[in-house]
Image (tube, rainbow, N blue to C red; front, side, top):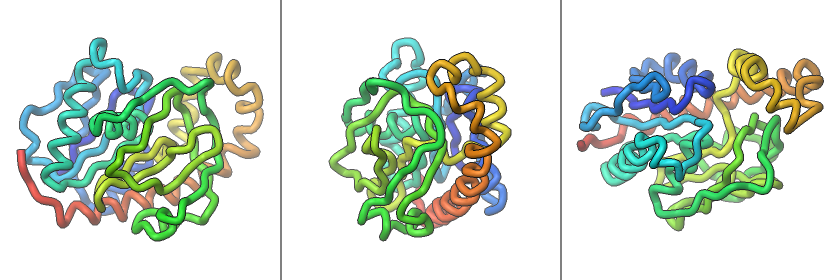
Length: 239
């Protein structure tokens, strides 16, 4: 059994998530959609699902048909009680698969962003390692409505729904816990003009603020994903 990882774009690789999974000994298969990988039709050989971020929107199924397949996969894993982890677009796809709206924000949320745990977050098995206030990298232009089945675990000022849990093994994060210095450098290299337009001070603060923040957030990511991986032990299999 292995984890199915859907990577919508090359710009958003799994980063620290893979480092954490490797430390647990869990096996995984990464399907890189920008490289024309095709998702499997049968999910019976997978005990968990991870969906990463992407530059497309959760509603762009017509242009990116794999989004429809990903939403179907979410419901299959949900109904067979197998763990799911969604990051940014992945979290939005979870919400969409539960018939919730994903809409444009008035402006993109980009950069190191301060978030707060909710009361439910304080008691959550993954989030109880976090301080009440913590920071992660963000990069998204959309927000999602919270599914009725979900418990809100963390919130932000500009985007309220930042982390949620469905049942005891499905997690969605609007922020990017996987981002490390390698991914950051790639973003700056490939999207420098966009970053300068959206957040003129960001590049000047990389060494003084951004990288020191990533030093702590990457540790939190590894601990959180390690805990999520333990949920795989109790998951059931079904196609």
